[in-house]
Image 1 (cartoon, rainbow, N blue to C red):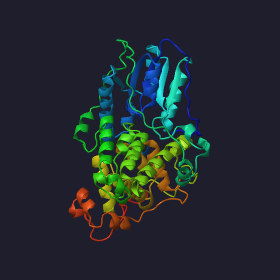
Image 2: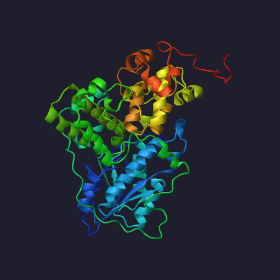
Image 3: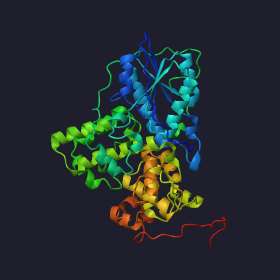
Length: 471
């Protein structure tokens, strides 16, 4: 990844009044019709529309840090979300076109060959996504308008009480400053969308669905605990606030397992099937009917954590991926191939860590407390480069969000937004607190792998630094 300095946020270009605006909407983490400012603007200003999602071939190849950018669990949820959106668009006489190609290569071609006059994109917090957006603009005619809208965060940039360069250095300061700031209420889905841009019959690049790699059929064997799509996200939102679970959220949020122990909104938020503003709207309605307490306030508190990391990613750009993070101080860790492999495959000397990693590998999900425990283990007990763990989470987690994932890993490694430095968890204490009877470990590893007492462990390595066996 590039080591370039942070770039300013792209701004929307205003287009002059024309008789026929032919729009192309390049979808990303905004796979919904409701509370989507882009669809709202298209409904007002465009006469024809092409909707495109690019599945890029490099997502399925091993990249830096021995991980693929997109694993099977994430792929399954993504494809379900795309199919659900396509079915919803069909009701408008539209369809979602999926291209199996790099966006920087295919979109300029589609724009030029279909006489597109305006291109839409969500204001993504990822550095790579923003770089691709800029590269596409540079390849296109200057007469084409490129417009970005905020779809992933509570606030638009002008609504923040500070300039982006002045983003507070810690979350607590951020929360205090935005506490009384205004953000727009969630909006309903549009009533109308313009008709489709007519595709050129000779254009072999685009088709409704793609031919997937040979391993794609394996995804149907994966866990069905989460199902992608806007409708499924709304069902989870409605069912959660139809219960009284929000009133006990803070008490149970650190539990390692249990559907009811957290909101479970994160997969739909990460893929844009739900917006953060929709969650806040539902929360406000719940509080108006049933009253607010510390737990309901904590749900909003954690949405603000999400908000902070998104603007953190916008500000620091590629520094989100630097070993030294935003601090400029490199951690005293290295890369131990054997230790990292043991961590990935749930074969470390630490039963609780193994149970959590087994859960991640089998389901694509892990509780927030579990993520902190296994991250602390990789960084502090196994003394490995934190970026390998962040990249593995990127591959595995169905609720992967570039800003939240890499921001949290920096935080725990002591190179991010935590003013107190790195966070090290006492694994024995964590096990005693959150799995004292060993039920979680037994569920994921079997009773035969329960520790005899405490959190005792064997030696970390079978080989030394020169790869010679340790006797």
